[in-house]
Amino acid sequence: MIRDVQRQDNVTTSPVISAKNMSLTFQTNDGPIHALQDVSLDIEKGDFVSFIGPSGCGKTTFLRVMADLEQPTGGEITVNGVSPEEARKARAYGYVFQAAGLYPWRTIGGNIRLPLEIMGFSRSEQAERVKRVLELVELDGFEKKFPWQLSGGMQQRASIARALAFDADILLMDEPFGALDEIVRDHLNEQLLKLWKRTEKTIAFVTHSIPEAVYLSTRIVVMSPRPGRISEVIESPLPRERPLDIRDTQEFLDVAHRVREGLRAGHAYDE
Amino acid sequence: MRNVLPVLTVVAAIFVIWYVGAVALNATWAQDNAARAGGGELSFTELVADTLSQDKPKLPAPHQVALEIWETTVEKNITSRRSLIYHSWITMSATLMGFVLGTGLGIALAIGIVYNRTMDMSVMPWVITSQTIPILAIAPMIIVVLNAIGITGLLPKAVISMYLSFFPVVVGMVKGLRSPDRMQLDQMKTWHATGNQEFWKLRFPSSMPYLFTSLKVGMAASLVGAIVGELPTGAVAGLGARLLAGSYYGQTVQIWSALIMAAVLAACLVGIIGLTQRLVLKRMGMA
Image (tube, rainbow over all chains, first blue to last red; front, side, top):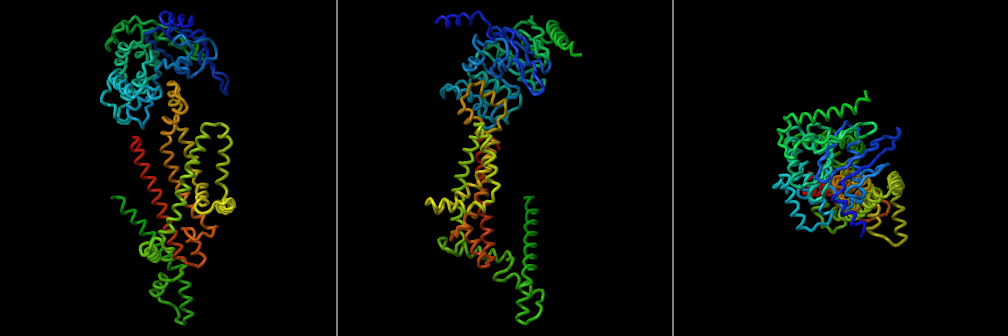
């Protein structure tokens, strides 16, 4: 009982994701690789946090630790106040991978239904949710189409719909638009912001694009490689309401400049 | 339609080679006969006419085989001992039974190998070893052992078919069940899917293209197994028995017609699988 009460308190006061001095070392044949070292970060409810850095900085690994796809070798991390494993088993997050990863033998509707089937939603509930999330990502009317009938951008939208279908409060996204061209990417970024506003989810977003990170985020976590660590956390002064042309304002350019500086500082010892 | 001409050309070339071969191989016998009859050398037209119409030629001509097949399929009652349809049916029933058993065994072993590390390490080498033993050596043993425990008739032949047909299914299904990539498996984990769900919703559907490819090879192997199973047993019915009887009595025309029949049977069975494959994969949106 006491624990329950405490947890209730946690929901309102403590961060959704909290890492303290967390480290992760992979043992390989070429010796240990320090993917993450002494990483501390709090993500608050409703935040949109981007992770940016060169490859090998551990940004994807960090996201995978939150999702319990990797286990830290040191330090602590909690998701919704519990261990990532418990959070995963409670289906606390939706994960969007770099590739859409839709099953070719299932229609778009069937793909979105997949996690719902696994989680044991009733048939009517499944149908209702599929319809709702398809509208959310503006793919209504495509339910009966097979993935190969959709463009890459539409497939990625379908995969986001799939991650939203079971109403997890946290959305973990690993370079979801990395493989798409710039025009499609702009469009999806805009849609994602709208979706974030409507659903009030907490989003952790890995990217290697500075404009994307600045445009989307309330906070930008700049990371540096070997060993992977956080070199800077930048709070964005931009308003939550962001039309695409906000990217031409001085404020936006200033933030982008700070991110670039942060990335450069992280790299300095490398040269 | 553009493919018709090249295909017909190849078929025509095969027939030409076959006829030339028939004349060449049967010529000695024809000349010897003519010499014994005291008629001297045969002229070219006489030679060709004789070599293409011998009773027991070394190589029967295509039309002789065609005629034999016509007589033993269309003109015979299908319950007759002399009907090729009857013999094909006997062989096909063993083939199909062995195929079903082999496919079942193959899929079961593949699942074991994919999910169990011990089985992965221990079973696969035995599976491969099993195929290095000539089936002709092991077929009589299987017949004898099964006979000793009172199993006769269709099943022993089916077991030999199974022995040959489970192999491609194991190999294909192990590959197929392992075909989902890391990301797809991670995705299943993020949804906290059970092992059962992962199998039925991801691994099994992913393995379908591999399964059908294996089934085609397995079906052909199964037919070979059924025919081989009929050879050492003194079977009185089946295409294998037909081959054996033909070779006892030098009935080359009969042997060739049984061979052609076996080929047609294999083509039909494999064709049916191909058709099923197209239907299933199309329904799955994968073709």
